[in-house]
Length: 418
Image (tube, rainbow, N blue to C red; front, side, top):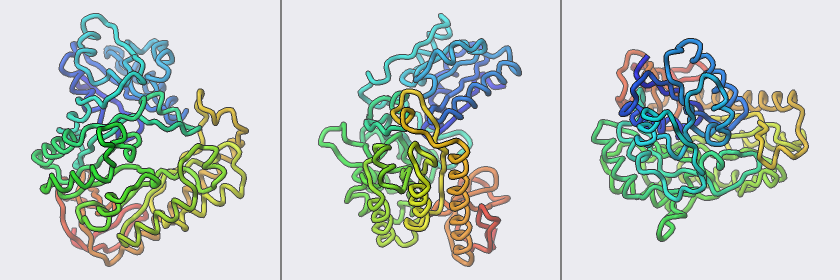
């Protein structure tokens, strides 16, 4: 075991922050330490974290176990009561060296009020400079927290209100990433299309994307993580249409394709908004590929309502689906709504995943014979510009090369020339 090991659950944002957490802990830790950076988006994520903590306690009894992340922020007592856990640290403090120093000196840590934060911590933005260990793409946190209160979501209580990193900080960090050899950056956050609402002049997220591409000409590829289509602005549409360094892939936070369910979720878009957005973007950039998040079996969802969601795969032309069976989260309004039986929830999730797998296979078939540009990652894999996974056995990570697609294995493209 290393001096400090970090076990990460959940989203890309957590993965970015884990590197900042590791560095802060390594600078002060005096004993072997395992840090669990937890996720709270589903009940299953919390269960898996607790299971992993127990296993670590059995297998490495000499290590100090510290728990942080969204689940720890929301319910610190749940983890502090575990005999394996030495300390619990809140999201606001997990990358602060002085907190880890105090833990080393006094054995105490803290979970503060996340809603008291009013700015994105600079150490998280700066923490992206070295990027995520083992990755060839760099993830840059531009925003944290969320001001919206979707009825199924507990995450605002783990992340606090929306806070934006300054455009200057973001541009400076991406320049450093490029200087360190990274060729692709991915902008990430909790609700990244809300970026700028809390900054002077209220600049838009699309404006930030445009500034990055303008001020960092050495950056070869830029992506964004999950977005709310209803918040796309004219700057973002302009970049999609006219900037080849902006990769032709968008992942959309759709959650449902039924208007009544969207209202009960307190989402800000209607079904027609999502369909129209995909059609508009595809007209601007015909080669673009869409992914989407969906929740199956939200409370009160009927079979007809679910059918509207299932039809979104074709109506929006989706390729990459992330499907979540609805998970009851204590403290959210949705838990008080009439629940769908669990067997039906699981069946609907299964049907959505099947539709996503069929859409992916169709996309892979369509790519055969095409010429693509691939950025290689570790483990003999890479990503095409549209985010399609590509098998690259024997090719070193961090290269961008052109090749012709000869086939696929159902999940990844296979190349004729590599």
